[in-house]
Amino acid sequence: MDATWVYLGEELARYGFGEGHPFGNDRMVAFEREFLRRKLDRRVELRQPVAGSPGLLLLFHTPRYLALLEEKSRTGSGFLDQGDTPAFRGIREAALTVAGTVCDAVEALVEGRCAHAFVPIAGLHHARRDGAAGFCAINDCGIAIEYLRQRCGVERVGYVDIDAHHGDGVFYAFEADPEVIFVDFHEDGRFLYPGTGSATETGRGAGAGRKMNVPLPPEANDELFGKLWPRAEAFLRRHRPEFLILQAGADSIAGDPITHLALSPATHAGVARSLAEMGVPLLILGGGGYDRRNLANAWCAVLEAVTTLPAGPGPASTGGNAGSGS
Image 1 (cartoon, rainbow, N blue to C red):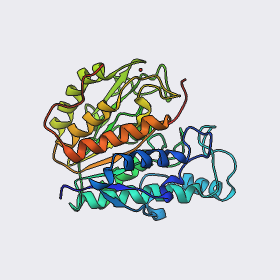
Image 2: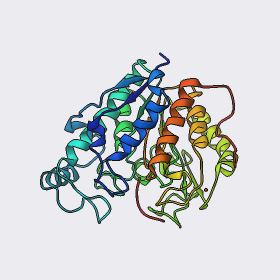
Image 3: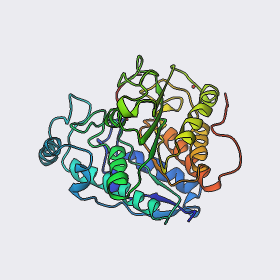
Image 4: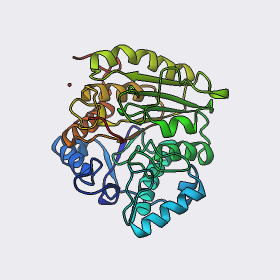
């Protein structure tokens, strides 16, 4: 089936850290407003968020960390990490909705009920198996990969990340796994949190050579990205994933308040189109993005790309304050 599913609902928007925080609850509102303005609801099938079961979190995270998450969710005080990810009352339930929605999309894709699915408040790629990090209380990307492998019988998963921040929580969790094909374009870690993802990090053990990290210099634009993408696309095609996940973080767009890249939504659209044209199920996760206009435009451009799929190459070659974050 060629349908594209998009998950919208206030339950997803509950994952956020309040007014004034870069990862505020208004991010969903900003996207939905632009989504409706462009009449994209006429091209896709709208779906409601899904509350996940606690067992989903155990697919990726340790029981010890999840006990901490549950405790902090009750009290709503302090941080889940060393100071980047504040607790709030109900954060565990909000995270369960992110995980449940992502896994609902995974099932629909594997069963062929849709060809592409987009979850805007998702792509929390910094959380480790044993802890939170960088605004990420859980790692729904890692949960999705484990769900595919353990419950859906999918052996080889391709994970592509174009968020400005390196997807360290995903990379190190699967660094030695040969069946997780990893491609990550991000701002060079010498200039931006979390400081990882050098080009020499290509996997270890059985996973050696199955990972590609592409650090970009500050102010990197569409033209540079377009020159680098064909190698990444060839890498993915060579390893023939059965399922693709795109973390489409919009903090790599020019003007984001906490990063320094200068891409445009054209790159996000081009990557999404390139992946969709590979002919396997494609799950798209919103990821970061802290300029509301940027995230709305980038995510809508991604949806326009996968719902039209015009013939053509991958990302377009066209060609604008550091902190943690997704």
